[in-house]
Each structure stands twice: as C-alpha cells, then as structure tokens.
Image 1 (cartoon, one colour):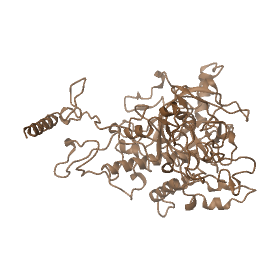
Image 2 (cartoon, helix red, strand yellow):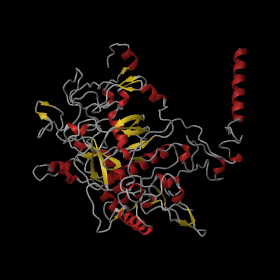
Image 3 (cartoon, one colour):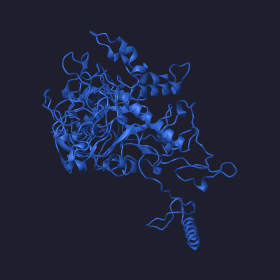
Length: 584
C-alpha cells in the first residue's frame, strides 16, 4: 500500500514538474520556444515525418549509372552512360488514371464552369480536357476509343492519355492544392467549402501568403497541430482562435510536379533490390533482372513482364494464349511492380518528364540531381513589396527573376543577379547549349552582345501564372526559325503499348512538344523529399526492413489483375545470404 502511495506521489510530482516546464528552451539563447510572453518564436515540437500524398511511395535516393544500357538502334548517341546522384523523393505507384483526371475535370467544371451561363472562366475547363481524338488513325477504326476510353467506367482504372505536358503540370498543381485543403480540413483549420469559385478557391501558396479568402475555421477548441496560442484569441468570440498554418508547421505536403528525367530513370531501374552491400549485382536493362522481357519464375514462367508490342501487328498475342493480355494500355497496377513498388515503369504508356529535351552530352550533366529546364521565378509583388498578387482564378502570380526590377521610392534592386556566382539570369534552359558563356567565340563588342541578348529574350519571352492551363503566354518573333528540338520540347521516358521492347529500357529517351498529346503518353506525379534521405517512419521501416527484392514478385492470378494485397512480399536478405530457401 505504501509503495502504491509513493508511486502515485512520484507521478504527481512529474506531472507538476512538466507543467512548470511546458516550453522548450533555446539551447543557444535560453529563451522559450512557442511562448507568447517571450517573443513567440514558433518551433514545431510534434513534427516526426514528412506526410506523403495518397497513392505515392517513397523512393530512397542514391548513386546510379544514368544512360543507355541497350544497343543504340536509333544511332542517336544521345544518352551516354554517366554516374549521377539522385535525392530521395516520392512517386505515384501508378500512372494517373482516367478516374483521377475525371475528378479533376469535375472540380474545374464546378468551380469555373463549362460555359458562360454557369461559370466565369469556362476556358479553364476547356483547356484541361484531354485530346480524345489522339486515338484516330486514318487507316484504322478506333472510334469506340475516341468516344469511350476517357469516360466509360470500363476504362476508369486505365492510364489517362491525350494529355499534354502543360495539362499534366496543371493537374499536379491542382492535386497539391486539393491534398493540402483536405489536410487543413481534417486538422480543423478550414471548413469544407463546396461553393468556392474563381478567386475564392483554396490555393496552397495563396493560403500561406495570407491571400486565401475562403472559410477559415476560427472556433476550434481541439486542434491537432500546431498549437493554439492564447494571444490569438478574440475575447468573447472565440474559444480558441487558430492562426493560419505556416510552412514551418510541417503538416502540408510539398508541391507536386512531374519527375525529372534522372528521377524517372532512377526510380524505374529500382536498383534497391539489385544490390549486395554497396555493389550492384547486375546492371539492369529493364526494371527487372535479366535480359528477357519474360517472367523467369516457375509459377508465371514465360509471361510478358509488361505491356508492349512484340512485333509488327502483334499487340497482345493469339486468342487462347495472349502474351500481355492488352491490345491498348492495360489498367494501372497490372503486371509486376519493380523493387520500389512502382507499376508499369516499362510499357503501358510512355510518361512525361519535367526536362527540356537535348541530346545529352557528358559536358551537360550535373552529377547531382541533373535537370535541364530551370527558369528561376519569384512572387509578383506590389511596388512596396507588401502584398503578393493573386490572379482572378485564385492562384498566386509568379514572375521571372529580373535583374532590372526596382521597388518603391528608393529604387532599390531586389534581384541583383550581377552579384550572384551560381546564376546570372532567370532563363537557364539553354545553359551550355547556345548560351553566351558556352559559345566558342563571344560577341566582339558590347553592341553585338546586346543584340544577341535582345534576340534571345524575345525568343524566350514566357510568363506564367500558377494556373498553367490558362494564363501561360508565349511570344515569338515571326521570323524565328524552329525545329523539333527546341525549348518547348520535353522528354518522354518508358515504352508504351505500341512500342517495341527497346523503348522499355529506362535509359531510352524520346521527346514531344509540350503542347502536343498522344494515345501512348501518360504521366505520374512526384514530390520532393525534405529532411533525411532515409524514411524515419516506424511503419515504413517495419514494412521495408531487410526485404529481398532481387527477383520478380510472384502473382496469384494468371490474368495479372493484381494489387499489393494479393502479392506476398519478398524474402529476407540475411536468410538468402545463408542459402536458405524461404518461400515468398
């Protein structure tokens, strides 16, 4: 009895001690964090792991050999092998589906309207519509696909096609905002608002900059994160007034985008399951081991590992013994995932990448997070740098970094690029590929240099709103000449349902104008990883600890309509090294 009494006394003492020290102190100044009485410097004290959007998997970064692994049958010599390092990131497990894109179109139609009788900006909806006419072929009957592929429920889990690069980027922006809006609603910071229209829509950047004018929830007695500060209360009106969530709170996801070419190729190879210590067992041609496109495992031996064109006129094999079971794109999640858990990184549909296409030379490549296409931008602010501008669609407005921008009465330059060592202008797409620093002979005099700079600026005059579908404008001189490879040409990766096996190698690369679409091109989204390169989530560690991904996953059904719940995961590495036969 006495022991129990002493135990309760000790617990009470601990609780009292903790209540007296509820604020964490700075280790360098001794001031309290999150204490309104001591300045109110806010530090998130419950941040554990970066939240991942639904449908995405973690891709642990590392070093790999980027470039061609197959013979160069096109004789382009445009992708020589080179060693690069990729930071960790998150990627969609599958291509974006028709049902996903239809949800996007439904939202646009509801918010902006589809005609001027029921909306203010129907152009936004029209600009987002996929080009279903990409299915037409002058010598083929594909009209059923034109009419049904996007909207019929039979195709709801098929990858969306007919989407341009611009449309894919706009979808990524929209998805970022919808995920963050749901996070804020679930955590009690916003009310659900199904009536938001035009400039009243939720936009992540507008919210963070205090420009969101929608239904912010004020009477919030029990928020999860971040903490409510007493100094923010409105006496007599709010039980607890919640301030707006800020970037430093860590509960919002990062901006979604298309993958860079290097990220896509790294994720497709899935070398995490093909290593022994720091050594790669075998350099892969495809996202699986071996040089064949057929499954080597006993249960599914001989089945095609992906959806591709086996030969001229052979899209899926002979009835009764179909080789890949799909004459057009197959439903996402069909066939075996690679070692990162990504489906259809070979075959099915080719996918848009973020990069501007150039024949890749060794001198072009940065060995860390290689990417060609940087256009540095900043917020469009008023002359006093007081208010960040928002357009009529509710999106924040960006502008290219300008070395001549001045603000206010003191004429102070804020984009002083002349003093920067790492870049000197906003538009860096052509760096080391025609830019002045890379020319063999620079302009002979200042006047020549000015003319060269002026013609370059005219050719590449681009302005963007965050709504890439509607506000994008491009101006070019009528006399400018162009080619298939220009600043509007983007990289395509991965083979498709109508390609031969050569294009399924992750090192293969093609290109397409960013405003065009095709019946064999889709996309998937990625998100940057912040913080540690290794996922610190305990659930992730339990799921992925000591997994052996060196062999293709066995499936339970020959039809190959599989998902993760139907697949038993892998053998453990340690027991494999001991030579034990551990079943899947």
